[in-house]
Structures are given as structure tokens and as C-alpha cells.
Image (cartoon, rainbow, N blue to C red):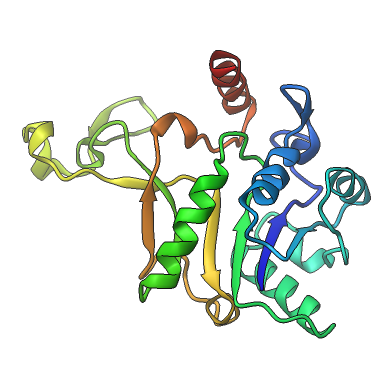
Length: 226
């Protein structure tokens, strides 16, 4: 049995009520729920939330909310792994058993269900901790600049200041969409980005919606691909 956990707390500050804010006509969390449903991979799709309204919206779109997340796992500093581990333990205390568990973030309007299928097959066939989508940085991180309070800049890596960009190794960032892992891996609190497989996706689909500017950019893209 495979489990999908969508962590969606109610206390988002930079974009209030972000997880259920309307995006192109429906609450944004609905896109995560729908992708999980369309993948046909999961015996159970749940939303882990501390918020009654998020719970109700999630249920309206077909997800289950078998418990409300405790306050100590719903603040600004709680990392992802303990939230997923809490969900696994809660469900397995009720005699459910899972082999593979996927955490899907709630604000992922460009998530493709096919990516969920491909990355699960990779996890099943390889000796890795997690599999998740990544996207290439738009420019070499070796040429990044830092700025002081006066606006003066200097390279983070002076040794690469005059290196041609085409001679630098590409770097990748977590796309911020989902993570597949074995149940045992989630429960062992293994760091997600170590010993894991990065599945490359297009840059335009890897928008981490953290503020209103990100939201606007995502809506522009959504309107362009309709």
C-alpha cells in the first residue's frame, strides 16, 4: 500500500490562507489532491493540517483528514520529515500498513501525475533514500554575488569570477513539489537531499510559491498554458 500525505498548515504568513487560496478557479491545494488521484498510485490520500477550514476544503476535493496535526508540528520551524513521520505513525496505529510514502506539497499547480509514477518506479528500482523533482538553476551558482549594506558586490566564489559559464558544472535546486520515500526512510528521519535521486523537470514548472510575486508569476504561466 502507498500513502500520500499533503502537509498544509493554516498559519501561512507571507500569503495568508495560501493553501486554500483560489488559483485559476479552485483552491490551490486541489491541484495536489487531483495529481495524486490521477496517478492511481495511492491507497490513501490524506491532508495533514491543523486547520478546520483546510480540512473541509481538502475533503470536498476527495482527500481524507483522519486527524488534525498537533500545534507542536504546525509552526514556522517544523521541517517536513517529522510531519510525514507523524502521519505514518498515526495511521499505522490504526492497523494500516504502508510501503512507500509520498509527501506532496499543497501549492503545486504544475505538478504532473506522470512524474509521481516515474519517480516511484525509480525509488523501487534503486538503492536511494528519496526520489524527487529538481530543476536546473538559470545561471551558474559559481558566479553568484553577495552584497553588503552599502550595495557593493563581490563573488561568493572568487576563483570562478573569470571562468566561462559554459565551463562550469550545472547546479540543481529542489523543485519543491514532492518526495517519494520508503516508510522506513521517513521514520528514520533521513535527510531528504542526501543519497537521493533528482528527477529533472522544466524550470517553468518549478515555482516555489512563497510570496505574492511568486503567486502572480505562477498565475501568468497558468494563463499562458491554458
